[in-house]
Length: 448
Image 1 (cartoon, rainbow, N blue to C red):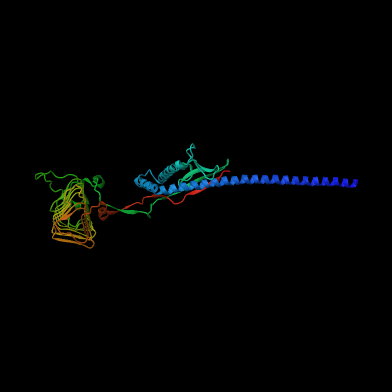
Image 2: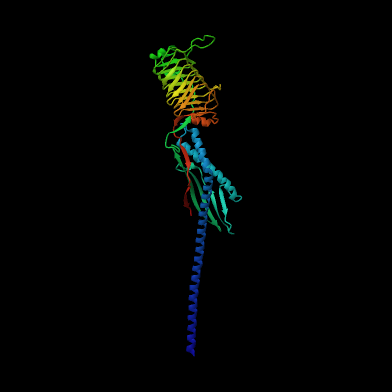
């Protein structure tokens, strides 16, 4: 009996030891499990705050991008208008154009952000912080803090850069990401063209400077066209004394038939009397800062240039090939007026007298040439021919003869249409341009 009691004691001790061991193991595993759950909770919270911060990055980028798309066309237009206005200013070049573009885009986006900011910012928060609270019943949110936005702080002048920090917050925990949004610009030295472009420009009338002609004193104020035999250029700066009730006598008299490569300049009204025929002349310039009167015949002249800052009066027969005639006020032709082989005649009608062009000769011919009248035209020709792609353009009306022929256009009310029809092609350097593209790039730094 005593032996059985001793064995019962040993059994009790064994049971207590087993229970103790299991309790220790249970507590150990329980503590480990609690620690793991706690760590997992921390990791989960960290992951959620990082995800919230990343959500903030995407939100901010999307907001800036939408503003950018809304503002891009107007900014592109404004910068290119600025370039156009300053294209002839040597002190403004590529660097200044880029900086102007960056400033305009930066201002436009900041104005757009300010509008968005009033919609999403919480009361009492700093003016440079956006706070977005998620509607999930928790203290879950992300905030966007706008940092330095001065584009001068970046190393490249070819982009607008916006620096920011996005912070995700949940249950007192947070994670932050710093980032930069870059909007690149493209500078095109030749704009959208490949190089030199042309534009249509109506002739302008400016007084020439006689000092730039380098005409000697021996060839100044000559009165005989025969002097062109010894002077390639003649300069008239004064008329003879007025006589015949104030009528100014001819500046020059005589013939200059078949003369080539000569020039007559005048700072006063220029008059060549009726004895002064110039038949068959080639490459001759007749230029006056005032009116021009040609009393003789000019038949079959070629490469003639007449430029008058007043009225031009042709009293003899006029037939010209491949020539140019520019008249500021009126053109009056008393006999046949015939232009051939790409001759261009432009009469501006600046003095407002009507008709701007008066052609009272029996013959009017426009053959593979253009006559432009910036006013009204009166013509009394018994024979009128317009052929071989000849053109007659009249801003106002045509009277005196039937003009309903192919190649004749009158009553052109739109000045731009008249300019396109009558303007001369002038080459001009391509104008540079700046454009902002379609994409926004981003650089993100994880601060945790």
